[in-house]
Amino acid sequence: MAELATLWIVRHGESTANVAATHAEASGAELIDLTHRDADVPLSATGEEQARATGRWLAELPDGKRPDVAVVSPYLRAVQTARLALAGTDIPVHRDERLRDRELGILDGLTGHGVRRRYPDEAERRARLGKFYYRPPGGESWTDVALRLRTLLGDLRRDHEGCRVLLFGHDALVLLLRYLVEGLTEEELMAHTRQEVIANCSITEWSADAEERLTLTAFNTVGHLRSRGAEPTREDEINAEPV
Image 1 (tube, rainbow, N blue to C red):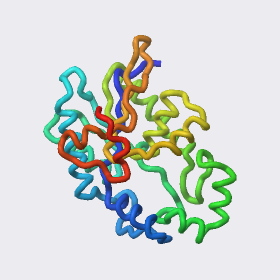
Image 2: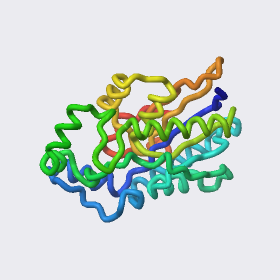
Image 3: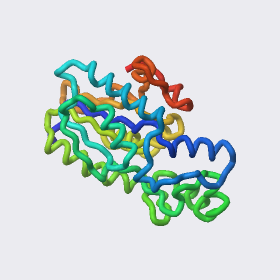
């Protein structure tokens, strides 16, 4: 199959829901204090600064290394991240619903504590099936998201052969792209979910090797934020290696 020259995915900047979820989990609340539906959650002020810093990183790339096209999740936090990061560029931007965040169905807006209190049967079913295959009622499993990403990758390879493609999306998508591009097993993917918190405005990159296969060259890096005037989200500072 035809291959891309470079593929990046940037997770959106810190959102107001990220802030609310961190507070809710820390306080032991059952519900996350949300005022928007998931698709309409905006960036926080910190997230806006992270997106602008990502734009400064993009602007510093050599002409022959910059993205040829950007594809963006339609969710507001990703759209705002892309808009701020790509401001002043002529990179074509397309929205694609296959890059939306994983849908949580009846568990949407609940903390881990809230799921265990309100839906103990679902918590038990998730523990039995495992994170990869568990599908909450009305929501998606990780495999469901992998299926839509698999079709997106096929379209990108067909429509942008030999090009540099920049995606703006969500944390689960970063890990699932590793699963698809690198051919990881379920066990390898789940190990990454236990070991890594995908940082706001982190950069993950694959580049074509001598045999034109995409090879991971950067994963979950946020060093570009502080070096360009923005702070990583507090819980993400562990991933602050430079890129």
